[in-house]
Image (cartoon, rainbow, N blue to C red; front, top):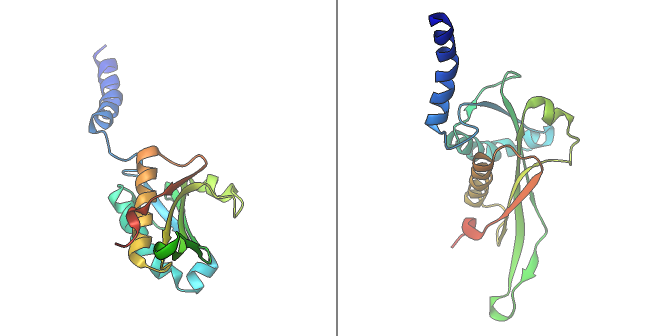
Length: 167
């Protein structure tokens, strides 16, 4: 009987410790790798995309692991439209709609998704300058924080937030 209780304690106590710890992120402690497209790498976009993304993942508790053994594969995609006029009168401004999409999931699930049929969290902003690094970093933070709070995306969620706009 003592052996059985010890075995149960060995199995249950670590699970209870995890529950009591209550990680702020469902992602905490998991490993990830970032998958980039050939054009992203060839254009030098990776040097622009990766630093804010790895920083945001680090704040969410994810740990980088190169290679196929990572728990999750992350994909980042950015887009911006050609701009349009918004407002009227003296407050009329030419603004671009900028979007950052972060898709993260188990490698097997990511590989099966056809390109263009991305799930994930898209953070969107209207801005007068579609190339601002600080706005991009803020959008990445919003998307990763949403994933950390709500778990891996099962579909596509869009966050529209002017908190990332420059003053």
